[in-house]
Image 1 (cartoon, helix red, strand yellow):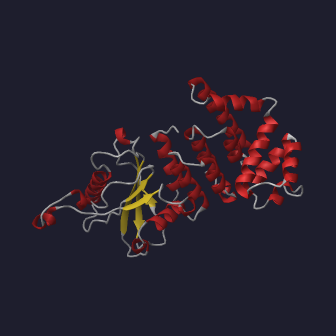
Image 2 (spheres, one colour):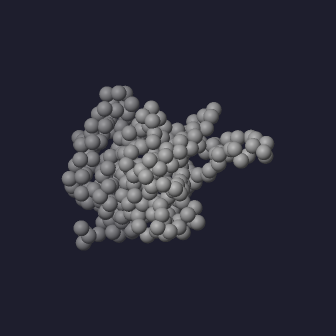
Image 3 (spheres, one colour):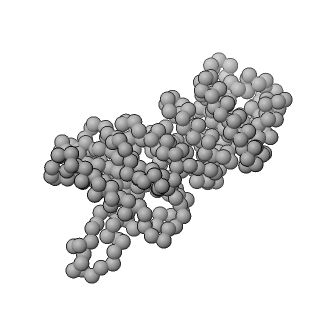
Length: 332
C-alpha cells in the first residue's frame, strides 16, 4: 500500500483537529492520573510544527494546550511515528527532548515566567513491528549512580495502533474508524472486512467521512473495487458522485503505471454490461461480512434484482442491523 507523509498529516489533523474529538482521544490515551487533572474545557490545538521538513515522511506532530483543574495548563505533544523498520539509534526520544526544551524557552520568551508548564508527550505508533525505543530518556544511558543526577529523564505515553484491537481504538465511532484506517494502512489480514465492520451509521453521520474515505481511496492502493464501492455506498448523492469520479481516476492511473491492472480491468468491465453483477458482488460481500452465510432465498433475490434495487439494498446493507432491514420495501 502506497503512502505519503502529507496524506498522513492530513488524516491525523482531520481526526484530532477538532476540540471535542481531541478531548475524547486524550482522555482515552493519557494515564488515568493525568486525566483526573484535566479541566472540563477541551484542549486547544496550537499552531505550527516542530518537525523538520525532511522528517515529515517519518513523523507527524500536533501540540495541544491542556487546561487543568488547578487553573494552569500542561502541554501535550502528540508525535505520530510512521516508520516501522528498526533503527540503529533512537529517534523519538531525542525529538521529544527538543520539544520540551523549545516549549520551555517559548514559554519564558512570551513573558509567562516560572513555573514552566509540564509537558506530557504522547506517541502514536503506526508501524507493523513491535516498538523498540526505551520507555524513558534515562533508558538511553548506562551510568554509575553518582552520575545519575546529571542524566535527564522523562517518560512518554505510548499508543501502539498495531497492538490495539480494532474495537478498542476508541469508544467514539468516527475516531475508532479513523484510527483503524491509519492502523490498517500498513497492511493487515482481512483489511476489507475489518473496515466494513467498523463503518457504522454513526461514522457516516460525521461530516468528515468524505475526507476520510478519500484517504482510503488514495492510500489503500490494493483495496479492491468491490470493497470501495461498499464503503462509499451510504454517502449522499453528491458525495457519492465525487468518490466515484475519484475512484475512476485512481484506477485509471493505476493502469497507466502498471500497478493495478486487474483492478482497472474489473472497473471497466463493471462500467459496461457487468455493472449489475459488480453491484451484486459488492452487496454479497457486505452482507456476508456482517451476517455470515446468507439464506438461499436472499441469494436468489439478489441474483434477480435490477441495478437500482441493488444500489438501494447496498446503501441499507452497510448500516443495517438485520437482514430484514436490507430488503424491506417499506424502508427508505
